[in-house]
Image (tube, rainbow, N blue to C red; front, side, top):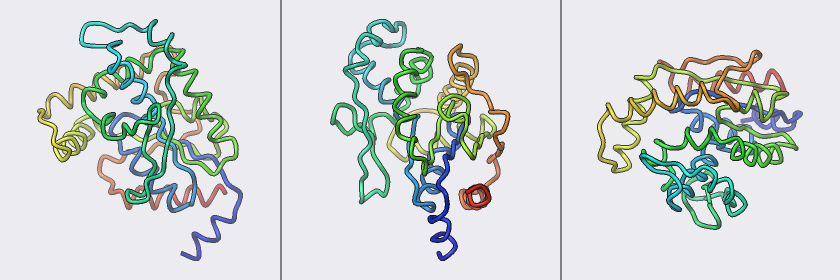
Length: 236
């Protein structure tokens, strides 16, 4: 604890955690931010919020995507984070409505990568994210944090794991939340999102040249956290 208190008095840095879907970026980023007394921002939740808005307004579905209509309505989307003391982390609000649970469904997961390909959506959210990190002391996870949002971040991490491992983690998580689905559905979603995220024209998912890659297929949360804490302390 003394060591952590000393760290909190050091120069604050920006920590960018990128990587594939279901690598546990949010989980480890939340814990890292808590240990460092940093602000945590889940950028994936922001894209999920826009996707939820599109679904709720019938702008996207199985065989259609009214992307122009979504672009025209971007000014009607207000995304905020409000800390929940009982849960110990900030929940996502869309236009003052708590949508934390609503955005974690497989339905939202099916469309979030497609919504994320829209340049106007990315521009709007990147601008908000950069404002959030202007004073540093922040841990932000997503797909393009180290390459686009904060290319000058002091610490960049790229998380990866096998598609099968990530699908199993996501499948277990969804089952625990009461969703009725198959492992194959989740695996297909994971691989599809990988393809869309990695091949989109605007800000594709790529590892920053100076990012530290961590394959957490066989690592516990505690092992990952220990590694990241050491990396952060060495740079601050």
